[in-house]
Length: 248
Image: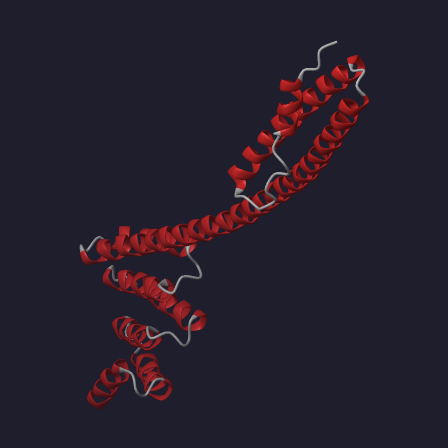
């Protein structure tokens, strides 16, 4: 039977082992696909050569073809090795990308949570300030009853606010403006007992002394003024108290 030397020549010219250099992600995946195509082509060529050998009677030709087959098999072994290397690298890249995504997602969520907390805190501070300003605006507009209700609602909503002592002070002043001296004294005493270190505490004592004087309790008013001077000697309210005491 006729030997297909064209086929033998094609087998001899098959490419040798593929380059083992490392590629990027996309290049690695493309390299895997190309290697698989080449292996398929090598396998098909090898099968054809083996079929031809069955029909050959020339021992020398058989030996030559056997050598070619060994070369093809070596090429295929090299291709399999490179294919395994690239496949393992792709698996490693996939894992690293997944780990990176998980880490990035966790950091992003942490950042978003922190930002959300800041926004909520800022909104809470703004709402707190607005509630206080609303009560103070009522007082300035001489709406003393509304000012008392608004500021009491503020204290119920924000009992730990830094503005709480001031709110309590203006409640006492609103009662004073309404000539309700008893409730005015009670409101200012609550300020002094709850926030003794507040800058409003001296003013609260001065307001108590004024309410006592309006009620005719001269001795009580004088005693309160002395307490003010003794307890808060450096306050502006203490200076006013000294002036009042000097006139009595």
